[in-house]
Image 1: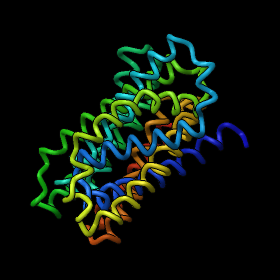
Image 2: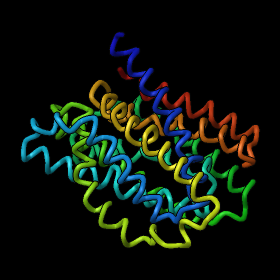
Image 3: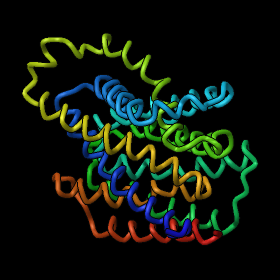
Image 4: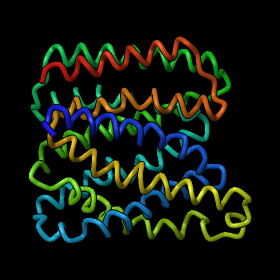
Amino acid sequence: MKTNNLKWVYLFTLSVIWGSSFILIKKSLLGLTPMQLGVLRNLITSLILLTLGFRGLKTVTLNEWKWLAVSGLVGSFVPAFLFAIAETEIDSAVTSVLNSLVPMHTFWLGLTFFNIPSSKRQFLGLVVGFIGSCVLMLNGAELNPNQNYWYAGFILLSGLMYGLNVNIIKRYLHNVKPLTIAAGNYTIIFFPAVIMLFFVDFFSRETFANPEFGMSMIYITTLSFFGTAMAKILFNKLVKISTPVFTSSVTYVMPIVALMWGFLDGERFSFTQAVAGFVILLGVFLVHKRE
C-alpha cells in the first residue's frame, strides 16, 4: 500500500482503538483505584511488548536508550496515571475531547524546540480542529454541569507530554524500528511499575473483595493489549511515515469514537457535538493537506 494511503489507515485504526480506550478506563475504575489502574496498565503492557520486541533491543545504542527512557516516561508511564485520575470526575467522552489539544502542543513544541517546519495550512487545520474540540467541550459542560473541570488539568498535562513525545520520536528515534521503540519504552517503565504495584494496595482484601474487580481486570487487560501495546506500535509507525502534527491529529478523531461509546454507556450526546465532530475532521484534512 502507498505510504500516503497507509497514513490514513493507521490514523483511522488508531482513532478507533484509542477512542475506545476512554470507556475502558472508565469501566476499569469501577473495581480499581486510579493508581492501581495506572500501575497495571503499565505493567501488563510492558510484559506484552517485551515479549514481542525483546530481540530488537539488542540494536539500540546508549544514546537511543536515553531518549527511549524520556519517551517512555512522558509518553506512556505518567499519562496512564493522569488519565485514570481525570476520569474519576470527568466523563470518558469529555476526557477524549480535552485530549484533542495534543496537536497544538505538538505544533508549538516542534516549532519552538525541535525546528520542525509546519505550514500556514497546517496551523489553520489545527485552529479549525481546536475550535471543533472547544465546541464539544463547552457543550459537554452544559450537558454535565456536575463534572469537576479542574480535573481537566490532568488531561492538559498529558497532552503536553504526548506532544513532547511525538517530537522526541521524530527527532531522536527516527532510526529505531517502531516495535523496538515501544519495547524500549516499556523496558524502562517495567521496573517502576513493579515496585509501585506493592504500594497501591492492589493485594489488599478490599481490592479482591470488590464485586467489580474481575470485570475491571478484563477491561484493563483489553486496554493494555489493544489500547496501549498494539496502538503504541501503530503510533510509532505513523510517526515515521508522517509529520508530527499529522500524527498527533489522531486525537482529533478519537473524540468522535469516544462520544459514540459514551452515548451507548448513557453519557449525554447532542446534535451540536455531532456537528463539532465534523468540524474536527475538517481540521484533520487541512493538517494533512500540506503533504
